[in-house]
Amino acid sequence: MVPKLSISALSKTFGEGSRAVKALDGVDLAIGENEFLSLVGTSGCGKSTLLSIVAGLESHDSGQVLVDGAPVEGPGLDRGVVFQSYTLFPWLTAMGNVEFALKAAGMKGKEATDIARQHLALVGLDGFENAYPRELSGGMKQRVAIARALSYRPKMLLMDEPFGALDALTRHHMQELLTRIWERHRLTVLFITHDVEEAVYMSDRVAVMSNRPGRIKEAIDIDLERPRHYDMVATPRFQQLHRAVLDSIRAESIAVAQLGAALA
Amino acid sequence: MQVQKKPNSLFRLTATITRGQFVGISIIVFALLLAAWWIATATGEVKAIFLPGPPQVVARLWGLAQSGQLWQDASISIWRITVGFLISTVFALPIGVLIGCYKSWEAIVEPVVDFIRYMPVVAFVPLTILWTGTGDTQKYLIIWIGTFFQQVLLIMDNVKGVPWDFINLGRTLEMRESKILMRIVVPSAMPGIWDSLRISLGWAWTWLVVAELVAATSGMGYRITTAQRFFQTDLIIGYILLLGCFGLATDQAMKAIGRRMFRYIGAR
Image (cartoon, rainbow over the protein chains, first blue to last red):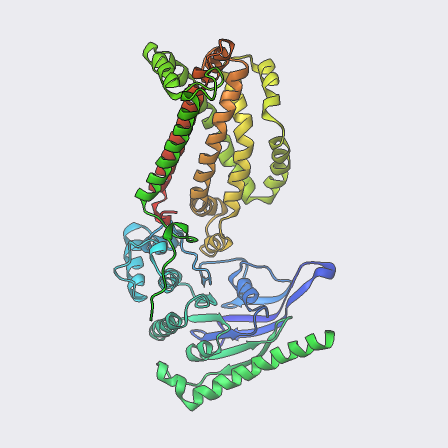
């Protein structure tokens, strides 16, 4: 089977000469159709850069990114992006923000309005259609952004630490909400996070990224049953998987610390 | 347990005050300044030829208003600043937006504008008279030189403040560059641009009067120059105060319009 997203030998360097920083070095990763894959790693490991390249917002030096077997050449409507900063336009209402995307995707008046309303309801924001972003909490803003990204039916969703700026309680709500939506509607998702529990709870597979230059260190299958619910967090299997991912990341941080000590 | 005493809200960082309190304080400050002026002149501490008292100034303005002179002077100046400021803004808007968006445009325009911006506008007055005579065109030109270059840089900064992710979002929606510019960048920068225009309008008033002081046969600046010849200090003071009022009025008007247009960002 051809994977939905296939990344091979991907490398990226920022800057030139002595200031050059190798962000990615030979990243190999494949995500299957309707798979939910989380990418975890220490901050600065290049996971956001990887997402930007897949989104087509950033160029790469070598290697390949294929969506449905076709190389990525710039951004496109087949890949919906949810940014960590909510990126809602302050001059548009919640409805207006979703409609903006639908109209950009070529949809017309009434149809766009209907679909926007449906998607706001999907993320539990019915009744807030006419609210401006400043009147919404962080979690609500991100729900609008998710509704917007889902509304024009991209082939996959790219999420760059979407819940990173939210408080712990809201984050849990959002994780459950996204999991519920995903389990009902199924979609290929590349989800970037540094929250290991979040990654294990939501994903089919968790890929751990090594430190700079980033590459995929290992991918751990999350064989927890679906539908997921929050009680699972306390189960031994969850704890085991959580531990496995954490150990894998920690090995990286220890390596960094030792390198730092050796240099000092 | 004793409840801790709250610090006085007027003197607490970031504390807000009511609209009534704000207006009240502003009025008190104006009243105090007026009282100081009145006392200084009424006691004879300051001679009337240097600084006439409020009644004298008001009487002079009243007289000019009765004869129609005041309105004639003011309307000419208001017309000039309207035209001059509009011309300047019409040029500054597209150029400021372009150099805020495109590095190549910035390279072409920004260094030149930055250079000209530091040239003293006043020094251009004799040149502009040579170029265009002493008519209205020269007034527009001085206002343009004084405001356009500042506006361009302010607007550039406003545009640069648009979050990159807004533009990235437009790209992921496969919007054309021109559409991203018009539908995302411009609306996003608009509240800031409006503020910049409001600030530059204040400068435009200064340059108008400068131009009228040096070479004009009409307008408020001209009236001030002629008053100087006859030691009509009361007229000079009166017109200066009036110019201050016009400035304050246009500023408040633009603020009010801005609050209406950009209601979505909330009161600041």
